[in-house]
Each structure stands twice: as structure tokens, then as C-alpha cells.
Length: 228
Image (cartoon, rainbow, N blue to C red):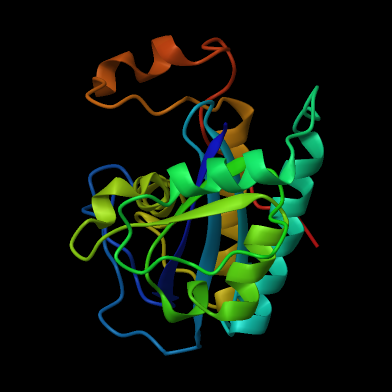
């Protein structure tokens, strides 16, 4: 059963971000000491650690309606790509499988009378928007088992790790002037990552990342924001 992780990164402000950048020869790197607040941006993230596939969307508003709409759209697309079960489970077998996946929980979720066959595990944090009954019921109805990270256990959610990589690649050394620019650069970093995705391995060495890539000879992990 595939395991996906999700999280929301940000807010990202329109301020100079420290990091390496080009500078004139013989001149130190300089950044403005003042910046204007032009709003903020956030980044929705879905990450498949097994093969490195990454799905993101930059937004300036993070209401439940926006978050749930994006998650439902992307998760539906992911489910559509999964192979259909050769032999559908009976209702009793499906309930038994759900029971094994929710064993040990202090608060046991109320499942639908006829739960869908489990097809995907989704790791997410305890954000209030992830706990709304309507959203959780939608997950159950589509065979998605939510796995919530415990308090202080955000490191278990690999979406947070990939978000730090995206932020560094997109924003380090930059001073973007609007939330729209920030979103363009973050989504460009996502496209660059997906050109050469690498899986996550517990205890893996950073130097071995390139050797795990399915296409180590492809261009670097960067991408240029698309022109409008």
C-alpha cells in the first residue's frame, strides 16, 4: 500500500532570504536592509517518499476550503493511477483491514457502515483542518487511511523535509518582491525536483542521493519560473 505525506509550508514573506547568490567580482554580497511587506505565500505539499514524486501548489490563502479542495483533487488523481484490486474485498474483510490499521489509537474513528477498501496511507499532522469530520469522512470513503503524527513528532512527516529542500533551492539568496513571485519560484523548484526525483531512505547518506536517482545524468535540480 503506497504511503504519501502532506504538509503546508510557510508563510513565506517578501524579505531577503540568506544564501549564496551571484555577486560582482571582488565585491561582497549585499542585500537591502529594508523590505516592504507585500503579503505572504504558503505551499501545499504532497510527497511520495518511496519514489520521490512531489506535488505542490502555492497559495496566498490557506482556508479549509482551499486546502481540502486541493487535497481532494490531488488524492483523487493519485488514486486513479493506482492499480485496481484484482479481487475486491468483502465488507467484512475491509472492516477487518481498517481495524488493523487503526489499532492502538486512543480515539478510534467512526467508520462508514461500508468502508471502502484501504488503498493508500496518508501521513499528516494534527492541524485543525486535517481533523474536520467532513474531510476525514471523505478520506474514509475513498479508502485513504490518515496517520497523524504525534505531538513533537513532526520529523516523522517526510513532507516537512522536502519542504526545507524546496525553500532552500527556490529562495536562498533571493529577494522576491511579491507572493506571486515566491509561488512561481517554489513551484519552479518543484518542477526541477520532479525532473530527477529521488526516494527517501531512512538513515541514507546525503552523498548517496545522486546515486539513488533513476537518471543521474539529467540537468541539475533547478528550474526557471514559467513566464506569463
